[in-house]
Length: 270
Image (cartoon, rainbow, N blue to C red; front, top):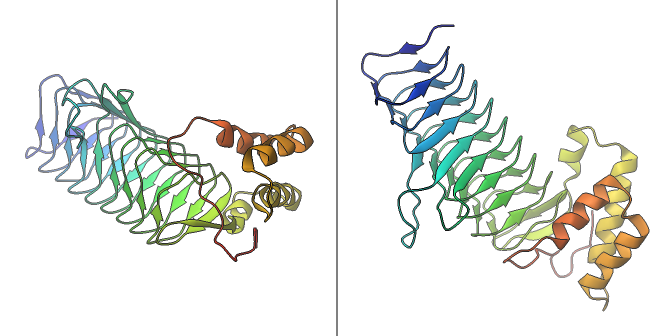
């Protein structure tokens, strides 16, 4: 596989291009950039900083990858960006470098789709198979689990976490942590139950879904029992189950954000 660089592209000395890379017209690839095998920069793409893009990822016009963090307190050097394999990065997407004070790295997993004009800020971490719809905005240090889907024009607060297999509806403002497997949305996002459509599409059996529904109901049912006690009860009764264990791990992990909960007056699960 031969590498093809358009004569109107600029490749700085030091950049590393693997076999099969395609760099279209008016692209700029910085000196610290590494492009994996089969990466395609369609045109008008800027890749800068200490950025590595994994094999077969396609980047569309006017995307900017690896620009310094938009954090006025952070220095402009020392951070890096790692983009996984087989990703799709559409028009106008921006992904910033990590910062030395925030862990040093912004990371995008494998097979992610970042649709037009979405933004991933410094020190964010996205798992595999994540979909950010058009104009989704992730503030710094957000943590997005595997196979999360976020609807268009949603915004996620800095340090917020969204657990694996969750779905966030479009036009949502996510201020708190969203537990794995959940469906959430709203101007200030609330939970609406399980992400049943997404779970079924990914092959979850009815038995697995029923167990997750029971766990969700136990955590968020109405009553005076505090959440910490509900978590421990769930762990003692169902903690051996793999899906419930993943839910418990998320709930017990350190966080700076409150937990997103069901709406008042709504049923705990659909």
